[in-house]
Length: 277
Length: 322
Image (cartoon, rainbow over all chains, first blue to last red; front, top):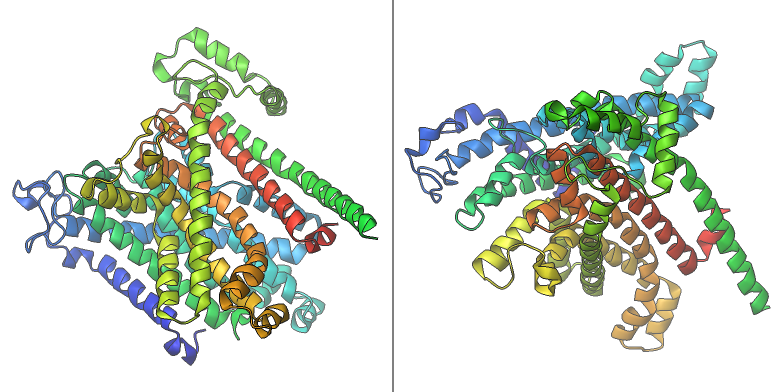
């Protein structure tokens, strides 16, 4: 876990600070948002109004307060990013543990499947998968991103297991008749946690960008659900007349993803022995 | 002596290439199987397909026959592969003509955009990376690498919107969107947008690779001979530093394909990416599956080309492959 060097790692600190701000803003949205994000009357009929003291980010085409919408949209974007990664990590851990521990034909089969999923440009396959459902929506985005997002974690965990499974403590546990499941979860997984955390953190940023992209294309969050990507789809329509509708949600998305990526890179420097000098 | 070495290395390249081609088999099988299964799931009940309620029985019957829907899945797959091999991707629900034809119409625009984006990434990326490496730790280095991180972190479609906002809406220098009959002015913003992420990775790779190479003996020797720094870096170091950059260009291919649907949507670019997005909205499944398949094939073949380039540039990989 992060040792004292963490306090001297500038990228890690900046990333952690950015992430903390967005996490707090999302959790506090119900109290921080001055207006109901769906309330058409919030702008009192003032549609596409410039940013002002009353509406720091301006209003959208229906007169809804954009600042409140960005706050509530961030809740969805962050929750999808983190939730998808948690599920994908679970799936990836299972695949990686089984493949690495049992080896042989099980390993070969699982890794071929991983290769094929990875052989696709992910967003293109995600778009194709969403087409299978009758109508798009955030739940389908979550399903699709989990279905495609476990491969990196599976490889990371498998690599860690391969490196560990011939160590004495694992061999000893085996000789003592400890069950395979217990060896995997108690002796192998804990040692892979560092690399797992790094990969998962970076994955969260990737999920947020993917969700935003799919929602931007109209294949994700559908009105009245708000995510940053859905807000940006609105922004695209009013780029010339009301650029703030596109600017603010995008800045939020950029800063949040930047923060998460810095956090991930920082964690890698701190946790992954291969990157420690 | 040199001659025999030369023919030996060609045999090495041949053997390594064969290995790569053989490894392609399972991946191609997996890709086609996956697309086929998606198609089968979506079309399994033809009533659920896009034809939906207004589908006439005759069209439904043709669909069932075309996809051998009444036969076992394995037979359906083989039938479908046989048709693929003949370049038959099925018939678009919406346009009532061959999917291959619809995609072929849109492909040139996407290829043009992808090449332009790669050019942007290589030229800007190598230049920025080399400039940053001249004086590591300087303000210029920090500024360029900061810009590279920004290019990597900025979601491609938002970057496109912001570039359009600044250079098209506000400054009026370039058109906001559209293909413009293939004019160069219309290509600039989409290419910058699609190439941005890639530019960032190439710049970072060039810088770190260059800094690595600069420590090598032969560069020190060149310096020791009193050659000007410009020649040492530009001629001796950069050429060797570019070897790993080729790999990054290969990895960037995936980013280009992922970014294409988004960039093409932002700029109303008539390519395969926008075709794919529109087809999903209309539930024109044959077009969706055709486009996904084309993207996947381009990606796999592109990686093969990069491998090949690598084999030619760096002799060490020839041995490692066999």
